[in-house]
Image (cartoon, rainbow, N blue to C red; front, side):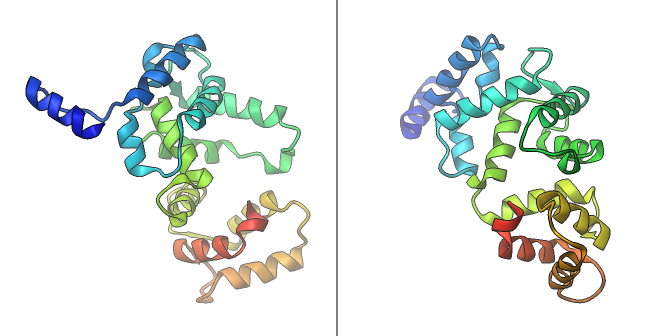
Length: 212
């Protein structure tokens, strides 16, 4: 399909794009959900270059999630609306206790990482790519863990014991202080009192099932 698209673009003297039939399906889905038609434009061919094993069905499910964040119904989400919507979702979830709620500073960092254009607004393409990476559809596992580290480190190059303890406690609310000490010593492989990005990734991969 991409080869045909390239030949047609060349014959017409216009640049080829990364749009595909999947974009049409997502636009129609957005329209059915009373969202702006252009919300569904993600340049599907480009998506497939950066993500693995994603389908239109996956994208439609994420579009429903995105609609809950889009408080204005304009197909764009501001930081303020993102925080408000995420707060509502966390409070309404029976599986998420207050101790595991993300703080505003965490949500702000997540928003900034999702907002790859840097325009202060989150569109569906940006949200879908970020969610897909976190759910293991990136090109490799490290990509999702690097993204997680960047979300929670707030620009720092390492986690302190307090920061990593907070992350572990939110993932495993029943853990006791002694177990936390053991895990921290395991994560801090160079014994410098800090957990670097590489140390965190190695630690998270080893304990992926407990921290999921």
